[in-house]
Image (cartoon, rainbow, N blue to C red):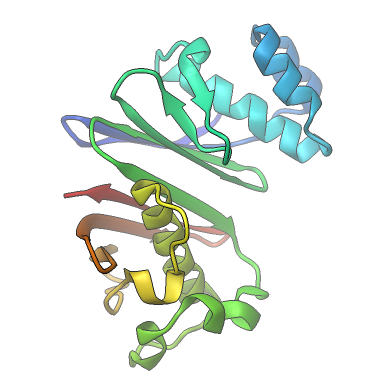
Length: 206
């Protein structure tokens, strides 16, 4: 289980990233699943999705979290019965988790040029920034907005108008992001990463 990154963002927030190198048989034989988890696993259509599902359970075990405490709401969002917060993301061979005592969100995407075809669907103000919107930077904006969406946990969020991300500082990999609507304004400490194979971002509500 090659954990690529594992660090405490703060005293109450921890982030872990794993690259899946094992095949399905190895993953399945190495972990004990309860009936609910087996039922969820059986609903996964592809081996990639099955491997991602099992990898999440491995990471929970790695984090000393009882997998029986993980639940999903009607929209498929993971949550714990207690007040501890979790966000999960996977793409291809990568699985990322962030846990905290405050609202968090995380998103990872493998590099793919098709993001350039849909950037106008989730970017508004950001389209006017001087930074070139190439594949990687466009993916990071998506990573951040998807992470904020997960952290806010509110239906009907408009990525273009409700979530604002200022110009990215690629050298620092740290930025603020905001959720804005008629009633609320939330700010988030935001970190992002651009790798050769993937981009990633996570947010922590202030």
